[in-house]
Length: 372
Image (tube, rainbow, N blue to C red; front, side, top):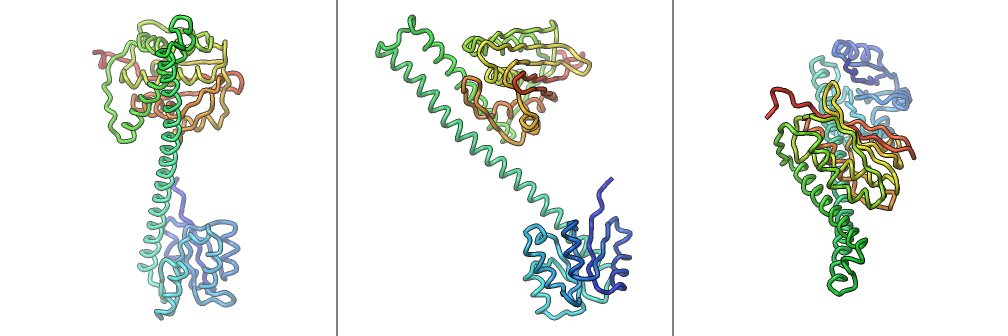
């Protein structure tokens, strides 16, 4: 049920309160009344109305003084106020607008005028609220971009610099490709991570511009998962992580092959990052009632409920250092979340601190109508 808009009517005349209340009573508004400026201020302290109809000529504290008091509080200041007055002098109107009043209703009260001005101000308030929401989302997006680009620029310089040093040492004879295999192996892992970072950045930029085009087809799930495991097996070996799989055979899903690979690779990279040396990761694939379920389960550091919420909400990219102090931008999980939605899938996350995490993605099955 839609919430009724709360309108506070402030007037020392019971007759005026009754007239205005009658006009608005059948228009799906919730009405409250105050007989003085003091009562109005007390009311606002307990509950903030969507609109105030404020009489100017009141004993003790007039409408202008009430609005001035409201302006002292940054929240109350934003409440739209329509002044009610029997005076039409330009200086009174000017004073009301200078104080931030939105509009005027002149006595004697006219029904159509009251309804029109109230509707107008509530509409403006709705539009302002929507603009504030959009601006907030834009600010979050801009902050996220700045953070991502800052981290990416640092990580790229570090990674490429390290690889460059390895090649330089090899050319200078300081590193032997046979005897110093550990150094070469680390450089290969670094190059793979750098490539993944660049690919994520490319696809993230495309998604922000709405330029991602999916080619949906029937995909053999076992082949797709094995491709991802083969790509990241080196990283698991580098941390002595036992990476196993349990995949039901002959499963087909309907989706985009490229974005599916990016989704699964980012989830597996994330699991490796937060699993300690000699840890375990299991990739499980099975058919469920409403799709194909792919689960990546680890016995790593786990996550808090707030971190899970941030991932599911996709409001921002955030990252923590891995168990071997691995760095990241957090963009991988953001991209994974976006691409899961594009493929008409969903993600479920369960986790416990110091016990590990399970990331499960469910995609539509390939039925008789989608088999290629």
